[in-house]
Amino acid sequence: MTTDNQRNRRTHKLNLEPENPQRLASLCGHLNGHIQQIEERLNIKIQNRGSVFTLYGDPVTVASATQILESLYLLTDSNKILSPDQIHLTIQEHLNNASSDQALEDQPHQHQQDVQLIRTPKCSIKPRSHHQNEYVRAIMRNDINFGIGPAGTGKTYLAVACAVEALVNDRVSRILLVRPAVEAGEKLGFLPGDLAQKVDPYLRPLYDALYEMLGFERVAKLMERKIIEIAPLAYMRGRTLNDSFIILDESQNTTASQMKMFLTRIGFGSTAVITGDVTQIDLPKGERSGLVHVNSILVDIKGICFSYFTAKDVVRHPIVQRVVEAYEEHDKNNISTLKQNEKTSENSDQERVNERDS
Image 1 (cartoon, rainbow, N blue to C red):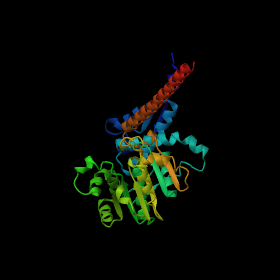
Image 2 (tube, one colour):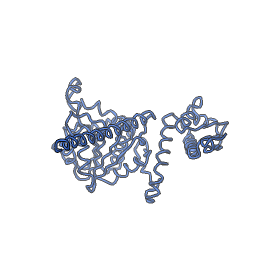
Image 3 (cartoon, one colour):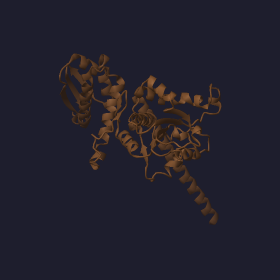
Image 4 (cartoon, one colour):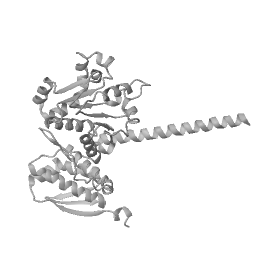
């Protein structure tokens, strides 16, 4: 007896040319590890003999897997050894692009080929999802940009890439990387040095991105000349920053007054990018996040753009995406439960009032 699930499955043969044993080995990975990675992610079966791959599964998934295999095989053309990370990112990029196809059809001028490639001295960075591409596009066009979403969505990395590109093309004269020093109490108190040095370890992801795009020696020289500056948010008070690219990272940990202070530091010819995750606020209880506050009052201001990311934009290990999705689902359930409890409480209060009146 044939089930509906079996009827909805198809077999497709793919011949990757030109046949090259080394490229095929790179594509398949050690003990076919890369093929297994694609199978598990897409819930599909893949078998191969030489350059001929047989794919078995849902028709839509088979079509996706075919395009992914072709894209990965093209990457091996330059003797590139594929890694599990590259496999994951290629799958993620394809799935994100596929999920945004309908939106792109509704807006023909925003075609998928209009990818905002960012060129830096050491590498070129291409956004890997529709949201990332729109985020980079917004940074290019607006003076103040907010990137809001979960960890691993590339908010800070892409902001640093845009800053480096602007610097090397002489669109700005310096880069400032800023972070609120929430841990300036007990945690930072035990670290050596002044406040700037104490905040330094918490900016390590920004340093890593700079090293990747500019190289260690060039970053060191630019920092020595104060062309790249690392500063705690507290050090921004009283300054006016002209011709600068300013990145405020972890902005969910700013207070409303700190956020206002930061935004009013921006001078002529400057671009500011503010990144944060409103689900990871470390402020003292009762203190409202400046990122949450500003989202409610600046959303319709010309020259200011808000970009939002979801778990689908996560470009780290697949488990990170699943963790983020689980937390998002948990938060939704908590909000739903809270609203239900409030409604029940209101009904109970009304019943007591009615009983009293009767």
